[in-house]
Image (cartoon, rainbow, N blue to C red):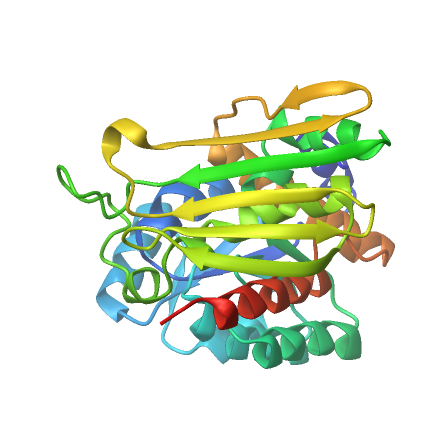
Length: 309
């Protein structure tokens, strides 16, 4: 993976790629915009949002152009970063790819397999690069830990949990609670991609899925993988605050290995942009790109279809 220093060195030999941001919510303000502004190998070019006043405010804060039309932003940029609900993101990503823009996507890419596959097809057809920002695959030390575990063999089982307190039964909701798609789709779709993004590269693709509901939006997945191992994942956005947390444990012939803690999400986003620019420069698709994002959507949609009403 290209480091920020490498990206800066590469940029010194020519104009820095221009990157536009689509979205103005808390995720865009806290992660995307700061990371884009700080990135040494690219230029933060401008902002478009569904709320013009919020887009204007965010653009003013970073001294970049505000766009009233996403297609105008696509025309001015080499790459675009998405901080939008998944089913708003997907059709705009297809349009951006057709305009020749490389795509830094958010997870999930979409909430239907057809929409996610359309994004992957557009990436392939228009020969643009794509990366899905799956935090654990870019944050450190988790990204390095996943790569290390993927080199091991003899895995037997794994257990993951992502218990978010976005909509806690006790206390105030989080800054991300004012999100209709999260309320509608719950932890399966919001944090499920994170768990799968670690389980799949280590244990192999998912071959069998079962799913059941718990309290609130709790979903428990039981998965079978191509490597032969079985895994589970418990997912929610409605955990009591005292019970919230993230963990993943792998067990196999080499022992027990636990996911390390991580921090600095804007830094992780900068590394995701490094990966996108590297893929764009080399023409080599990133394994965390739109094709992987589409596969995650297929698995999550299958699980959702198995859940009791």
